[in-house]
Length: 324
Ligand code: PBG
Ligand code: ZN
Image 1 (cartoon, rainbow, N blue to C red):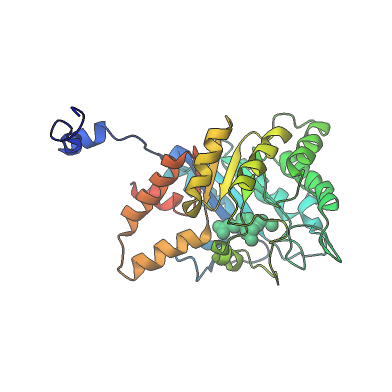
Image 2 (tube, protein in one colour):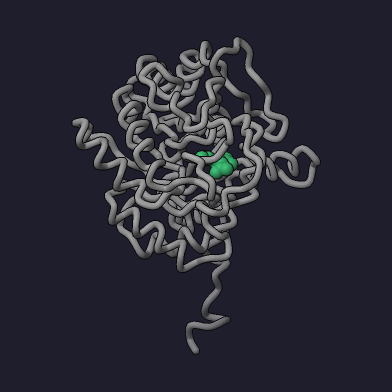
């Protein structure tokens, strides 16, 4: 009884800025954020992405300039996505040692060696059909795709990528990549697995950003958003396969899953605040409905509170430049 009102008054710990700050439970800083970037080959101009106000595709020729700018602003890490003009049935440009995946990585690492480069490892931006792997009659061929993921991972590692980040949602992809990297001598290259990746409609704006040619959907390989047990199982499988870090994607609508995986694994956990989450905040703010900076802070804080160590966010550069 004595722990109840009027003895207990939680408002005491909210009575000034200093007290509130002293008792704040979670915080995040720039060092926790990864900036996803889109790099387009064979063009000379930036392309604005209508569905993601403030985000532009970077022409490859301006990538070095951009990386320097990010580093100066305090960005510690980028996730690279290529916008390819060399599509084929399997996405073979990704394992060409002078292909876009290799070149993007090399430019980043040559320009700012201490920038942590995560190479998104998939095929959907390099295939003529837009699927995340080798397409056969009945859909995406899991095991044929694994061989190609291994080849792409080695090419990215050779070019200097610090992290291979497989997002194809194929079974066994972490194991296949770990083996390929180790066989090629890249024992120190890490794997940040998109270990729980939902088939989410919140990826909509990304498809415009990446110039996706996909017709159809990815529901035969990405997860059903309604499934919680399976979400935990997927991440634990990647842990067993040798992932160095796990990820939940999207983030904001899946805070329960972030918490579940945080409690089920001891690996570091990332969460990806995806294009649709970014767009919802940007457009609501542009309409005057919400305060952008405060909602960004609140949404990223909530992702941390749920249990994420690292957050991938298109707001990372805004935060670097404007603070929180
Ligand atoms: C593709 C990929 C997607 C995203 C990252 N990698 C889209 C998809 O799976 O359809 C989405 C990122 C975002 O929406 O911000 N493997
Ligand atoms: Zn893909």
